[in-house]
Image (cartoon, rainbow, N blue to C red; front, side, top):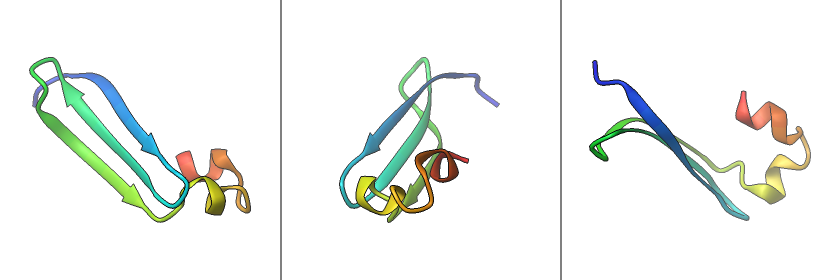
Length: 50
């Protein structure tokens, strides 16, 4: 398995998207949800990140 170099996050108003990326720009993993900033305020931001 390639080693991750960074995490890219797009946490918008209506959705949350996260990508685990290696040094060459290849996506190693991805997570998506409808827990954008507006929805995440109810359970708490830490709960969404877990």
